Length: 375
Image (cartoon, rainbow, N blue to C red; front, top):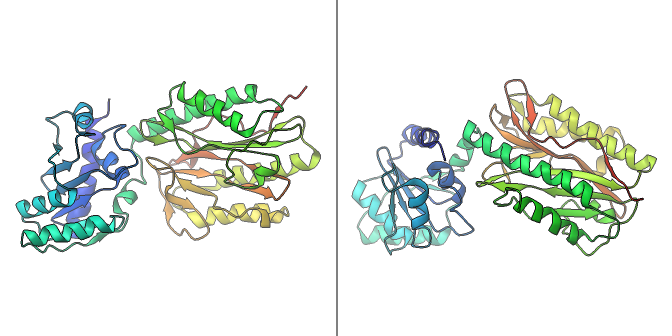
């Protein structure tokens, strides 16, 4: 059961931001932001079907009949949020709330879809009101950077399922299986061992396909000597895990082990260097430096890491242009890789939390190259 006090503190944090900015009210439609503010688990899906209206002393939430009963079941009818399934558009509902509250400055998200915004202006005009609509530039997403203990517990559980799946797959994979067959087994294992869903479409990329960082599983049959990149994660109560391990079928060649060791060195050095308040691009550039000094700089082109939580890609970021700090309580990946076109690819990824002492990965899966016996 969700900790109601934790969600009350999140609302307090957002209201403090509203007061600081001089907002009379705010309209929120982003699903991750709504999940974070309400605590309603396993309700939000691919549709932007909900609208919240927040003031200093009121919390209102508009949805429809497809979701209404689930919200009431999750949070109760007598909680701090007043749920409404009135059969009107979200924009008309929001305009009515603006009029009733006499709000003059109503913050909206810069991610709000244009059609909703246009309708909101029309509905306000119908009521002869003309509030100011200042933009919130990912402000709730920024508040979500620092995770509370409730969130960290869910992230750790998502990772536990992900770790168990890796151990299972190391005993399952055999020469001759297709990438698709491996993906089916991996995802089925997670879904039958505690996951509520998948964090994202799993990447299974073997042999030369591994040189494509976001390769989609194919009918390629894995062979002795192939590296197999597995990038995947379990979804648990709306929170994501994200882990990559690269295994090999049979003993590696000297070159394969050498390249793997470079990736591991970059990963472990960056993880050990990352401390509270470090600048995202500095940690990314450290990975680039290590890989480049070992002769493979041109084969590492993506960012070193990204935030993880209610979304699979959040702030902060270990990336070449990210000049923000990485604070205590933020959750972020470390995932260097080397990708040799037409030959093979290697990536090693953990998700972890920034503590007062430094970066602490959630994963228990080993960093050593796992060799799958082919005999």
